[in-house]
Amino acid sequence: MKLQKRRSGDQYSEHKKSPGRLHTWKNDRKAGGGAYRHQCINKSVVPRAWKAFQTTGRAVRKVVGGRPRTTTAADDPYIILQAKRDQRQSASFITQQLSTATRRQVSRFTVARRLHKGGLFARSPERCLPLKVDHRRHRLQWCREHKNWTTVNGVVSSLRMRVGSVPEAIINAF
Image (tube, rainbow, N blue to C red; front, side):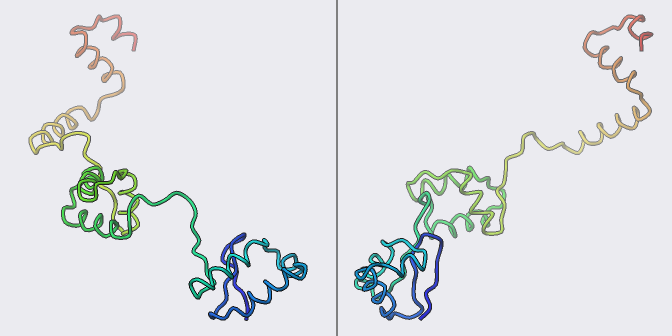
């Protein structure tokens, strides 16, 4: 049987649950360990795999590494469901709901990543209030009146608004 390499440095696993190849490698280790050097694997891999096979019946070791997850596999669909229920919710609000439901602290960035994996994107709260219809109309009217202004007119106008009156020497300087 051919062994498959999971990751470099990790253990090898067989296609079937037969310990034949592992048993051969274990005996080779006792004889001198030439197969280990030939296959470029660490000597501790085969005994660990042999022990796992004897206890579980499989020679595959779960690859565990990195930081532990703050959310469980059950939390991820919950986050997506909360976002779909009310699409105006921010990631911070969903984080608060999840923290009260699970009694675990989760970062809003984690919630945003889980939403992104689910095909959704985190909502960010608006920085300012949206303009009302009257505001838009007055703004458009002001823009139409001042569309031919040059930079000088804008500077003089802003100075008049700040100071009140602008001396003629400053106006002539532009």
